[in-house]
Image (cartoon, rainbow, N blue to C red; front, top):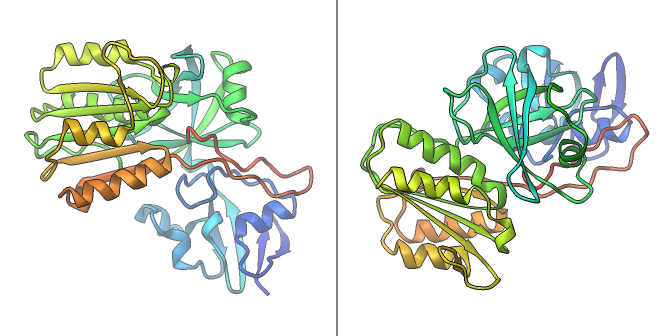
Length: 338
């Protein structure tokens, strides 16, 4: 039987059980969020034993070289001794601003207390002092002093509820990351860009669009943001301001239902994109938000002629119920806003 040793204590794992699930089941507190190998908040380090290759997929070489792995994806066949992610992977950051962008979306700005390298559009794990972890995309630019995150209020969401109702300016959290390949890479300034997302999937797209413009992108940039109702749209004035300042940038908000509004389309996001940009071969695309929408769009864009290497997608994973464990275990589900 596989078993894992953590802080001097051995724990048996059930058949095909991950290190993360096994430790949580035994009441061991382990930071985690998506539990699907995406957010990387459950990083641990192997001190002895063999780590399955699948548990290191998507990690930077600098992490795999130091035997870090994703606990949620690690199903060892024998004995494995592990330790939590060390302080060298985390940067303290202080909340500087909490600003409502809509009734359901909060802009959280944090100032890292040491250097924090990232690309606009990537995501970070936000860890509270009690270990609660959630992942959010970066809407800010690297030259800005603070990191900008967009947090959607989720019914019963531990992190989003705390940020909306209890967090205060000056509170300190830890940042871990960044991760994700959804960011602008210069080199083809004339190539048309398609940015499409739903909900707080706008956050990375907002960062990517502004980053592309700041780096001198000259080709068309189309940003499509979809919501169920008009109340789900935000940053409308800011994005229209970007459009007025840059002739190559076009912003198209849409809703699935609701009365007609000036400047806001009604209908499915995919249909609006197909109608507005019917010939997409040779474009580069960035897709963020609802996983079903992202998956469907990715398939349709590929069939429309986009190369897979030019389709960058980050789906925002839904909440995953935590296993029922002892009082020492920590909540293990991300806000759907990532």
